[in-house]
Amino acid sequence: MSNNIRRGFVLVISSPSGAGKTTICKKIIEEVDGIDLSVSVTTRQKRKDEINGKDYFFRSEKEFKILEKNEEFLESANVFGFSYGTLKEEVVSKIEKGIDIIVDIDWQGTRQIQKNLSNDIVKVFILPPSIKELENRLGKRASEDKKNFLKRMSEARKEISHYTEYDFVIINNEIEKSVSQIKSILFSERLRRFRQLNLNKVVDNLK
Ligand code: 5GP
Image (cartoon, rainbow, N blue to C red; front, side, top):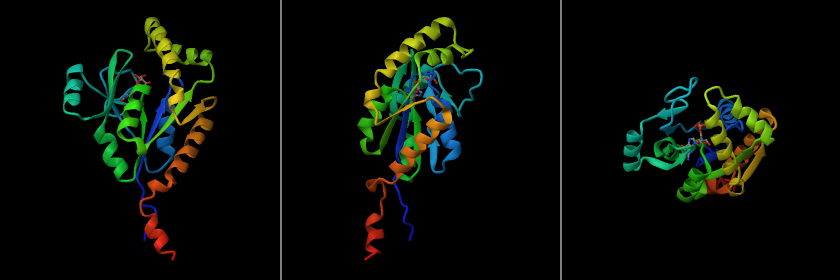
């Protein structure tokens, strides 16, 4: 008998924009089995290096509103003046199949998922090592103009103020170390008793 029937969970990763979150999430997906990345819907413009359907589902405001009206979102929020949302189908059926899902969302979305899936959420906040480093990273993004950059810096400070709402906080000094720290969280959370659905049968067989 298999002894690893498990309920998956939502691994929420939040951080101010430019703290290295996207790179970290991609590495975890590459290096760990049994975990997928949720692709969000957004109404913001696609950046040069982004792919529709892989980085985001890029949609118009009108299309976003229809998805909202049809209750297809697990959570949605306005971030930097654009709409962002996590689709239920990207998350719910997968965790029931024992697959973990990384969602890269802001504090507003995290609160909504906390409300809807309170037992199935693990919340990690990533801090940049310093404000200087954050400025460097945001400033280096070629696609952002100056006004947008300043707006993002102000949004970053706001996002950081919500770190206390998270279970774990990682200071991203070095990508590889942060990835390894998140893996430790992930592997430990997988072992939580309530996520292991057939422990009673396993234990019965030990009698
Ligand atoms: P960016 O536009 O730079 O990719 O993301 C901007 C911010 O929006 C990031 O903080 C990111 O975590 C957040 N975000 C991306 N997708 C979602 C989503 O589906 N829901 C929410 N609430 N925030 C999101």
